[in-house]
Image 1 (cartoon, rainbow, N blue to C red):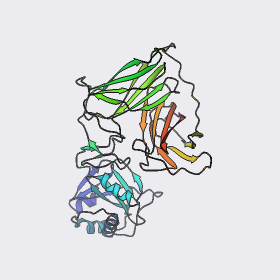
Image 2 (spheres, helix red, strand yellow):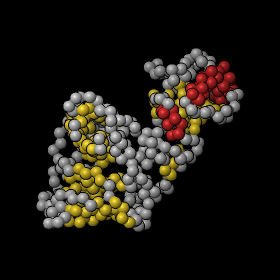
Image 3 (cartoon, one colour):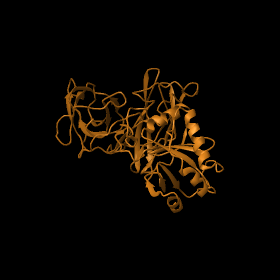
Image 4 (tube, rainbow, N blue to C red):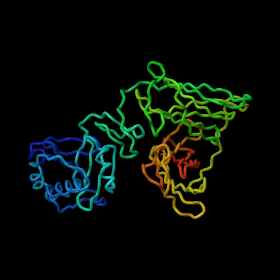
Length: 403
């Protein structure tokens, strides 16, 4: 690295999320120790040959590379002719647009981070890197770690990137008013008011997330009652859900994105009229049932989830087959803008996560989710998907080990 910086009158740099190296004009050379178990690019190509091959590979897939000064590459080839060239990387302000174009042409990343995607081409590797020198101005409302300096679409879920709002201090507030059902048992309507954390005024504008302004989940303390609904907005910051809810204790979970703030998952406990039980019920008696098969509306769902550890992302792989013929399902329909939805809660309903598939356009038979498991313990999830106009809701119980 020092030799490259000195010979080419460059500057030593540390690129966040990428590595250390030297910058020469608009080009970088980054250095890393070789992992003998890791697949590398073509060691016999020179830097110039690798750049030309990578540029041609991108052009074949509809991505043009701007012409740049190439004075550094021949010198780099002489300085590091005996080194292993792993891949060539290109920066772009709109990573989502470039990556989407490559995915549409059948390219599949072999490694991905918040800032980059690496593609193995059979020859030299090609990496698309977000221009980290440009300030972030847009993000994905469902994947806030996907950011860009320009508008575009999220490469994971294909949602439009929205402007990143200024930071707000404090949690948005949610007030819930319960209207008793006829006869005084249960509720016939929930009225929600979302208030700004700074002004306490009703929030006036919301982003549309998966086809709705607000996703509402109602779950009872025994984790047996589950509803995923979408209240109507009746005024600024005010939503109404007209749906019969039985007498009992429930957790109401609202998932939304105010245009003035960050993505929100607000939880409020309610007791509907007619409930006569204790106010502090025991935790539900949950038994892990993974691996296990569940059947709903003629679809057999198998969940594979191994090595679930607190503080790490879990891989939840659902495989769907026809319950009568055992033929893999391949005709899933988009449900609220996604092949499926998962709500994951812990046993005492103090933590919840609304997650979406890693495969944004799959029609089956596999749907994969990767939620972060915050702590050890038992969790219950509900998978929802649509087939033939019918929405299926399939529950599973997970056990997560300590870190």
